[in-house]
Length: 307
Image 1 (cartoon, rainbow, N blue to C red):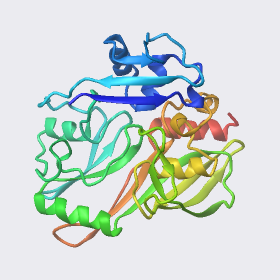
Image 2 (image 1 turned 180 degrees about the vertical axis):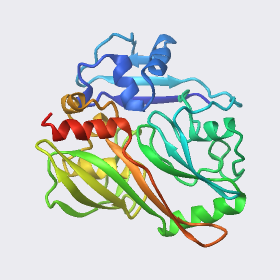
Image 3 (image 1 turned 180 degrees about the horizontal axis):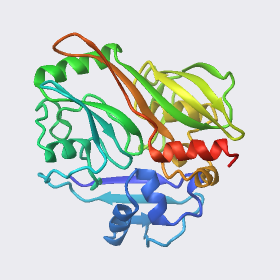
Image 4 (image 1 turned 30 degrees about the horizontal axis):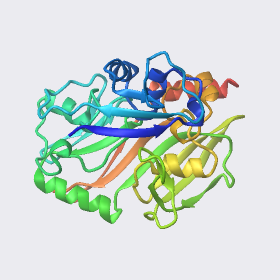
């Protein structure tokens, strides 16, 4: 089924080329965005857009995604490391630019496709395109992610996430300095009232709780350890934006593009650094960790150097 989305141009993308802006808004590669535009599938204020058109304040993009093929050959994922593997589950270290699973409009690599291409058996439980997926990381988020290999593991792991016995710790670089330096953000989240590709703090939304701690403060940004009590879509990004301290590079949620450029970041500065789960068969508590990826580490180096 063809999917159509209408998206307002975010303030942080005003002046950007359409191909670059669309790639950032939808979390796809610039080449994939360019292909979508060249196919005539992108309208800018109801006129067919060109790649080099510039986005202006108040404009709307209408994107028509081609129907996803019923079957897709598994695609290897460069740089995706396996941290753990047994009969029940596989733990991966997801690189940037990789989706958790196939979806309409996404033609890039996926965790599921990468595992299948490498010969891993994935649980058949879950929606057809999300089999084995018990939790997700955004395309632009790096780090530790668990995938179920057996049906019993899928059921057990999903229950752990639902019951909040999983511990997920992220590292993020936020603009400015949060006040207080350590605290809890308890604010309900639901779909944005006018932009369905975004989430927002909304009265009557789903309960959402984020704990954060400032690890290091730099002149223009802060390195945070973030512990999720709940796991809503875009939760960290939405909560930090609501505090007026969006993640560096997160243009969808109001980040300053000039700071991201200075730090060499082309995606939200968010990394899933640690995942603690209970093994679905043995009951053993397992902890998996991932070091900062190169772009994240480089951004911290530039901040330390006064960038």
